[in-house]
Length: 294
Ligand SMILES: NC(=O)c1ccc[n+]([C@@H]2O[C@H](COP(=O)([O-])OP(=O)(O)OC[C@H]3O[C@@H](n4cnc5c(N)ncnc54)[C@H](O)[C@@H]3O)[C@@H](O)[C@H]2O)c1
Image 1 (cartoon, rainbow, N blue to C red):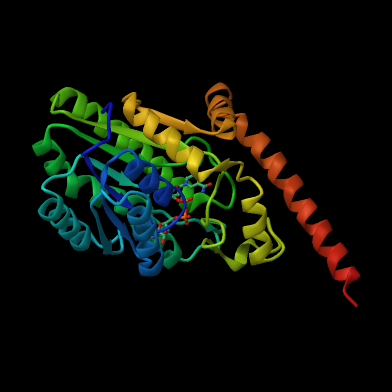
Image 2: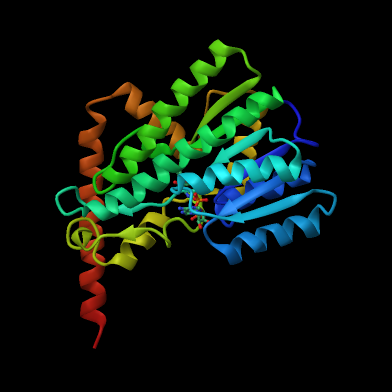
């Protein structure tokens, strides 16, 4: 898809981060928007900003949880009813979880799988028939750098993002075989400056293993965020224009991809060394600050 003007895009997770940045850039290009998020105030804020900056663009909003299959299918129908069709779907909504496998509760694991994996599946299946009907469509599924390489304490996130990658690569191959006017791209962002770390779940079992407190774990996670959400959205839309099969965002994502492909087994030992070093640094910092507290 070379141009976005007068197209219709559906975006999940549009209330924050990359979802909001995609909404702003698409509307600036003249694309009409159907926006969804589970957070009503931030979703409405995105819609308000879009309406102020691009008053000619039609914007509809839907508060929903992407893990709720019926809601996602109802939203796809609503989108077509309100906009007369749909050309792009960005299955972008996602959450993060830090936990050891040994200590991980099934409810935490089910929470992240339901959102990060099933949310992408529901969005793909709900919108695909409408994209095919338009004969000019693109599905953009957000995986992660953690869909390319694994990390201790991130098994739930890793599992969902590897699953999104496999699902989307297979989808793209099927669409290529069908020659139906619809394509698909898998997105692998590195660290992007968004709210994902602060809204993540850090399980208690991580404290003393890799982090020294829940908040310190979130703050450490954030230190790896080197790319802005605006730059990430620009890279994603450029990938759609070039019909890329996958989009790596940031030098961190490109380095991790290279490492995992070059040393597919040995990279894991390097990750363990680095995670041990970071955990030791966090312990030293925590003991210095508790010694300084009167
Ligand atoms: N920020 C990063 O460093 C990074 C790196 C790799 C991949 N990602 C992925 O990028 C995507 C976007 O994340 P972001 O970084 O912009 O985070 P963000 O937290 O800023 O935005 C995520 C949005 O998704 C919404 N959301 C969460 N759960 C939802 C649900 N069940 N139903 C509907 N909406 C829901 C949130 O309310 C929020 O508005 C996610 O899939 C994330 O896993 C982010």
